[in-house]
Length: 169
Image (cartoon, rainbow, N blue to C red; front, side, top):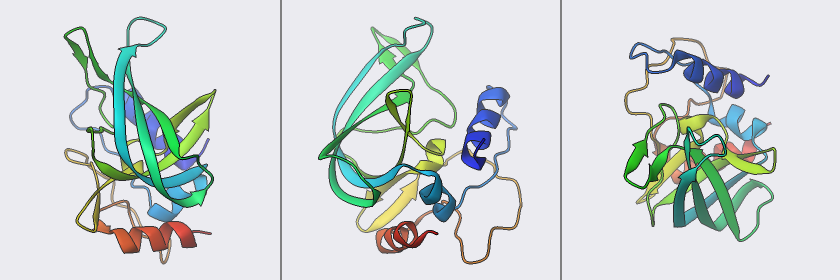
């Protein structure tokens, strides 16, 4: 199991516990483990019931403007947990959130015929005015040393994020 998968599993097992603590991912770690990293704009979103009819998932279409790592087409269709269907809303802690028209850098992982955001909310950076920010409000991270030269998934310039993704070894 990859470190990022273990982080996501920890969030899922923690459920709604307000005191849940996550292990921080580094940009370089996310890049190494992702199948692709893209920058693009959200052009469509549609929520639906998952096949189990107990969970809501949202399909997010991103028009790709730049591939930072790996390969991706002109558009990428992502699946994220949560959304609203017929007046019923479901929010999933640690899941990334998207808004129509927003620009983002997204770490992608392909699994079982679906494309997911790798690293949960740590794997999606909203881009505004040259600044890239992951949506980590309300997250608490364990204090731990990071590998030398690597940087935690945290706000930084788009230029630095791209440099770190492209240079990850």
